[in-house]
Length: 431
Image 1 (tube, rainbow, N blue to C red):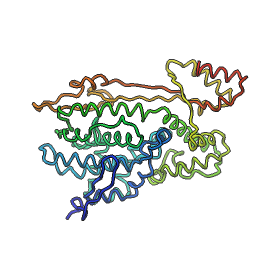
Image 2 (tube, helix red, strand yellow):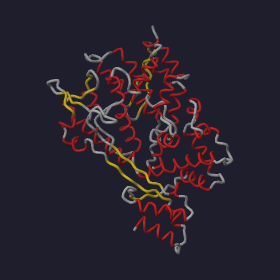
Image 3 (cartoon, rainbow, N blue to C red):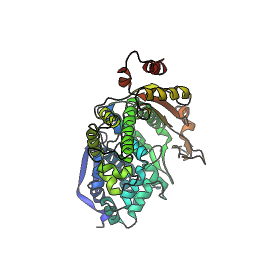
Image 4 (tube, rainbow, N blue to C red):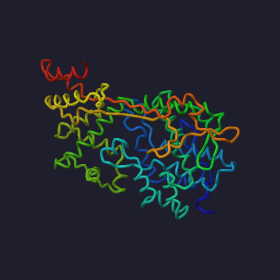
């Protein structure tokens, strides 16, 4: 039997709190799970700094990747007798689902912003470079690794395959909403996935949903909306991300200034230089990153030491509502006052903004255009979701943005009560 068709002697299962079981029968999938690059995902948290807000949010990208694989496996099982489904694409879909998050780094999004990296680029490098994952994919077929990379990169010719992994109602979102809700302990992310899977249908270029499943899709869209504002954009989590970003930024600045670290940051040197190799990138996980943070608590630089202590021991910045677009004068005055108070405003006065578009319909020619969710009518006609759903129509195309100002309130409170600088800062912040 050829490798791509090889099955395990008996099915392997992973016990899963969201899907009950993750089923693996394909030898290729089992081998991919065992690679060093995939096992590394156990050491990358799915929700970054959210564990400092929701103490249960310790789950990993390994958990999530298995979950996305399982959802796609079930979708394909439902599609196997459908006319529009090409069974030859089965293994490709499963591999793309399993490997879609391979390139995430430690505390991914904050990390990427500081070092100007893109985890999607590293996902492509892992799939196509000198890795254990690539060696397995090439055993399937010479071009198979490139096909998997193209699906994840959304450039694969079969758009139906791409839509399973990346669309406005895909396996990726369906897993992380439920998984993140489970581990954070909130109720917002729950929706009737079983119903959605039953009413999904393959069309030529995308997955569509039978009109009878519209209410389950509405529930899914609203779950996503609530999860973003109640969990993903939680202001306490954003405070931790602000401090994390400032730690990495401070360490980079000190390195560039020739500062002598007590512990040479070997794992970060290539990142400070802006040219990490794939091997160096894969060697840096969250366990290594947190080790350096603990070591940097003992550094002579007071800013780096303080920020690391805040992150490790959860002494986070406080926040207030603050819109820099309409409060520029206050911002400029605060910047000067913080400097006068001995608090470097580049590290201790931080505006953070979050925004989300919960659902959008297709607008040809617009940057970042999104393929909408289509409902399949009994007549076989397709209608865009927001045309039939008043709930979805009410939030379609509406981008919500939120601004917060983060400050070390404890440091301000330690200042003398007679300090005019402190008094003025407090007047601006709290009126």
